[in-house]
Amino acid sequence: MSILGVPQDLIDKYSPESPEVTNALAITGQKLFQEADLIVACTGLLKPGGSECKEKPVGTFFVSVFYEGQTYDYRYLIDGTPEERLDILTEQIADQMMDLIDSKTA
Image (tube, rainbow, N blue to C red; front, side, top):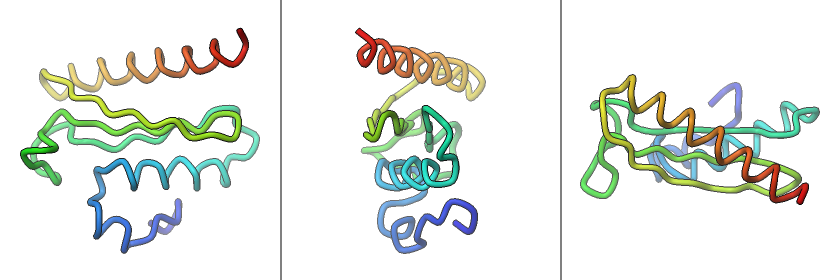
């Protein structure tokens, strides 16, 4: 909260692992890293102990990518061990970033 400036009331209302908080992270990240071409923010439930529920089980991840003045939001549900989830998520994000870059340069 203190570094990226995400308001506590947003976290309280939606939970730390939510599309709303993830989007806010991407937007504030863009303000902090103005020279970056892409800002990627990610929240999620890698393992039990977060805000998991029926609608948001463990393995749910929210990703927001700020690119060329616009934020793109994604939601993933990934099975496996925490390590497997992280590997898959990393690949998914990399693919999504490449797709965004390709769509803007085509």
